[in-house]
Image 1 (spheres, rainbow, N blue to C red):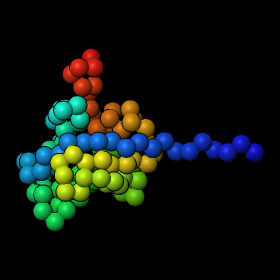
Image 2: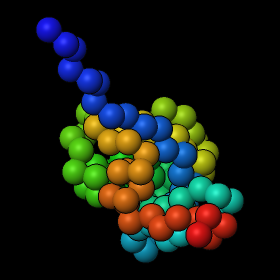
Image 3: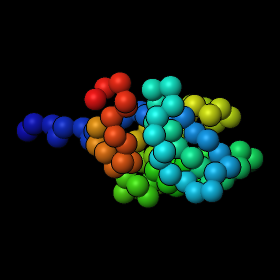
Image 4: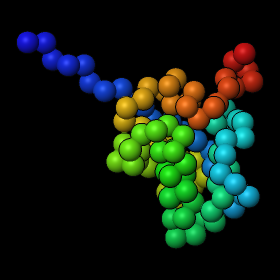
Length: 101
């Protein structure tokens, strides 16, 4: 019996700007998708806001979205179980970066 193919998975690197009026994708910063977060960078609030926004935008369950690096930095790496990178960027509404057409 053939094995089922594994679910897609990707790791996205995002540039995050906490303390904004609303959480949203605003374009690109240094080649990374830039996300403004409506939470301060205090006690993990910005990280929680990012993960909540990602689950809402992608439709993935909370357990499928994890922060893997950058807990105290603006550049964060998140792993998404259930989407490949192209699907994830499309779900976030990210247009290709300016230098890639």
